[in-house]
Length: 225
Length: 188
Image (cartoon, rainbow over all chains, first blue to last red; front, side, top):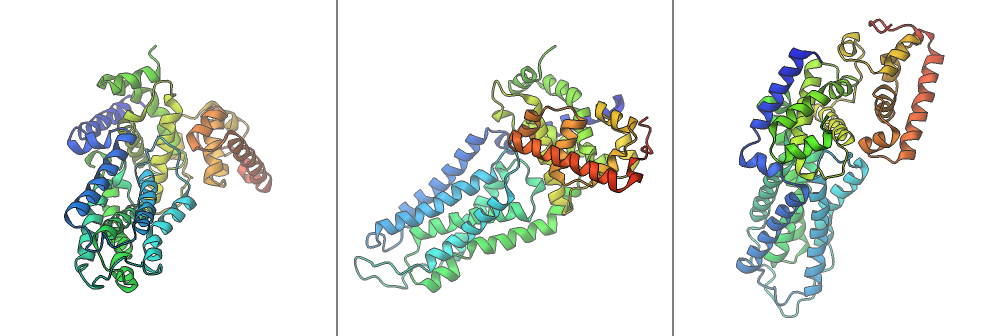
């Protein structure tokens, strides 16, 4: 690396560092534990808003242990997915097979809950009350989490189908977590058709966006990213 | 001379001159590491630049007492992995002489060239995990514990990879005597 080439590289490095001075750059440069905390706060905010303003109609009649177990499944998996998404590049590469298992579990867990035996409610409820907005609410929350992940991700310009799977599985988990506290419908068909597939829908939508635009982004010089 | 770690601490504190010095110190090494597997020089330059960008983004995670060199090399290896993953191609090795000629080979490369080995062709026959270990330890002179930190494997796993890599190299050289011919580049 001779003098002129080194100077050119230095200029490019400084140019890319200058581009990091905005809010997004500052958020990305936060320590990993702070970025993780931001995701946790966002999830807590969503849950809080749902519980206060859009709680399921049968909340008092629904078995609390089941709701807690349901939420614990989603929160636990979401914590693991977030840990992978926010993994900084100074740590050695994550094990690919473990990541595949995690994504599969995150995408399939909502189907498991959808097909679980129906809960015994403590009083009779209208089985079709509410729950008409599940897909739109779930997808909106999921997209919001994907955007947050992209803002906090250290290398969003190198996103591919593998990272799309991680992002979308996390988004699907958040959507199902919120819907578990929002939608009073307990029928397996409703849960399996309108709740559980949100992660998969987001995976194909986001994967498609990346396939269409990701390669183009990769071809751009780094200084312009 | 100011240590790498001290420079990093200064950069974390907002001293832009510190990153300039770090680029001067590490860009040649990073470029060599990239050129061992990236075909085009422009892409290798781009990846070195991205490595420093990632260094900036990870600066909040750098803890006092940590060593900067393996930390930075881990970022470089990850940046390169992501590059190949996004491009949708298998990690490659530059078989054109010009890619490595432009880099400054470490002492082991010179020794290998003197011994009459076409190192590029030989390394191209290794799996990526073994190639990383051989390149970092044998060519760039990293210690095994440093290589273990960079590739995220245990010390024993790194030694096993290195051993398997050496065995594979010997096998490649034994199978094809042409591999033992001097490299076309100006090594010797």
